[in-house]
Length: 410
Image (cartoon, rainbow, N blue to C red; front, side, top):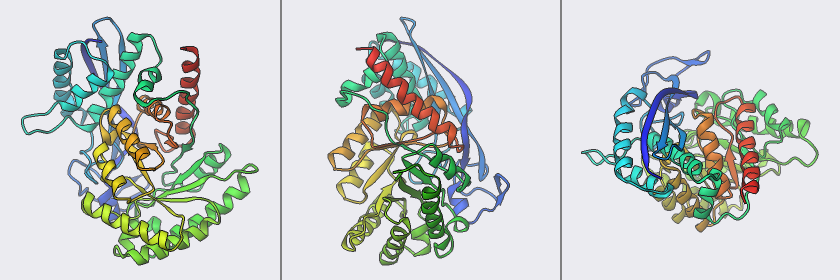
């Protein structure tokens, strides 16, 4: 395909851009809003509506595709780019259009490579959100021009032989109880995230978190269908490290108690702790994981922060730091980067978790579902938004449609 033009329109993400460091420091809720001032560069409030840049790519043969440039809820921390400012990113779209037009005839992979290699005078790449959105549009334009479903473009890159509807992981947001009921009634395979991002939620000694796991376990038995045994996957945003002062033995003690509270269900803890950079985070998680295994604990550790590219993922894998890595789609850039990250996880013996953010859009969620199918992921995040029902249906139905399209396109 030859790229003819790129159009852009300011849009909205399905949730909010939040300053995680301000929240961790004690920013108080006021209804849906947070009080106080932001502390992370790029945030103009502790909470503000997530922005998006809606991108349309058209080829010289009249094929076209949409992709949405979106960032994660907690932008600006853990090595991530700053939150989206749609107006400020407009010049990056112009640079991308020029580079792609100058590239001439390209396939999907080559076009993504062009996007990833664009740098400014200071050597900085395009914002990860722009790269993410452009690659979605390129995938759909390539599929349109070839008259095949998008999954047929991705499958040769991963060796996919037959797609299947994958297990879904849902996130509750702050509504940790009612939203769990929604997940259980829908038979979500992995739940509930929990959003334990503050001392108020986690508890100064973690007891509030443990009480929640006990309630969660009982609720699954009360509402779940016969034989329903989901994996419990909870994100604590480094709060365990904060309340234990990064003491490995105390963190391990706590996670063994959490495992008992899960009462036989598989338990995964995302971001139990993180350091000031990737190196310290890897060291902490590797030590904690080793300690847990010495105690014959089966708690799974999950990395998120500082895993912002396939090279980062490979470092966590090589260090044996975690059992699972969230391949957080908007943080990696082009969809091809997520394919490489998934391959690194597989090569290291890890399951593949295709994640993302509540702050995304329906378009980016559907593109992520295509990537998840292509790599035969072990779990895929239900997104966007924090309403559960919407994200679960968008992602599950996207996978179902893709499986039908695959069969019809043989």
